[in-house]
Length: 320
Image 1 (tube, one colour):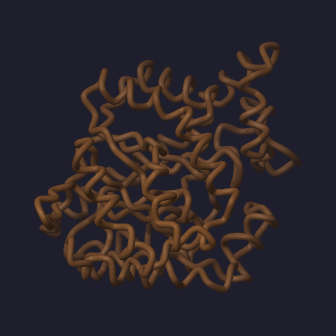
Image 2: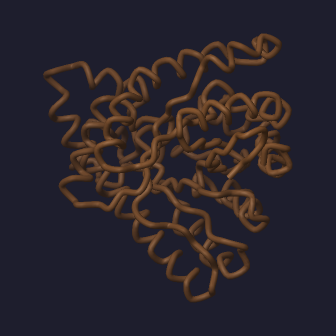
Image 3: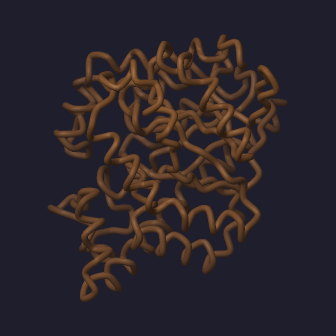
């Protein structure tokens, strides 16, 4: 909880991309060992997943607490866990690598002659990815219990790489899988970020990437169905902070914007999830499972360290 001038808001300091690469995971573990992360997301479909999970299992006894863990559904990178035979529309090549971009998934939502088949295949992949993470989470929670390490995990937590679960056909597939499998869900990320606060701080306008405003508006358009689902299933309503500043969640801008963002979340009675990517990918870890464009524009950027530094400093904010 955070309190300042009457502001009381539930904060979730979250890091995406555990198990994207081994070094990414090691960096996130370093943050976890210092108690800096409230929750993390796990990428289930990279070949290094088991190695990264073993690192976590071994680290749990020395953690101050075990963060809550989410399945980070990934449809644009990594391997297709359902297999090319069950999800040919999602794959490319002989290695069952994911072959669709975010835009490709988006287009499938609006092609009536392909939508039904696409949704069926996406459901197969969602089931496969959730199964992998569920098994890992159960083991991690068991280790924590045996070691006397606190963990507040209550059920299945879901988000996705590039917020793909917000795309209509993916969202429908996810909602159907949850119902059909009877999953006990405690959280689904709503990629809903208030835009007015960013526009009001005119001194920061030039520091934002224009494309991130497009991302913000598009995801806001689809956020209403997630809000509705949360209300109907007694899930917490939330705001996400990490779209307009995506790729560069630095401490200085966070400190400048935090009082206004926290006040808005408190006023609307929403949990505020502050999203970071504090793990660094090494050049030698870029394989055919990771897109070249994503590696160049995001994973290998020289300024990725600013997000790790922000995670280390964010709890020093006066409002915290």
